Image (cartoon, rainbow, N blue to C red; front, side, top):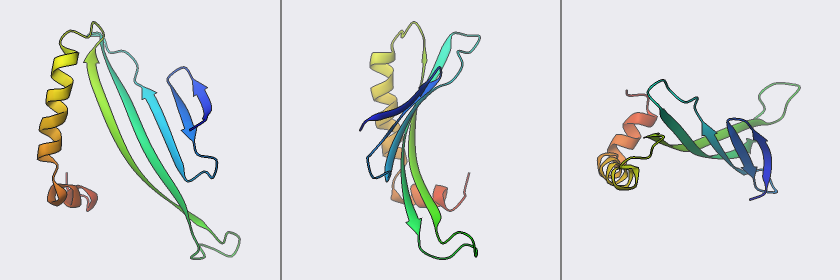
Length: 105
């Protein structure tokens, strides 16, 4: 995907047809020296259902985001992050994902 934007806290990439977009974002460094870096994949599709008399399309955006939080010294990050990712993926099964999408917190 070609990069279409870059700024101090991130970058944006998009397919030529505009359907898929990736955003990479950095949060400000916290006082304790930790940083959160997020990677999001967004899919944008036109919905041909008329939204109003002036706009025939309402864009539907669905996205998935993954965030990594780590100490900037990266102490143990190479070991901890894969283990945490595996544990989270085991926890977020199809049932829990449906409950989250439905609004449960």
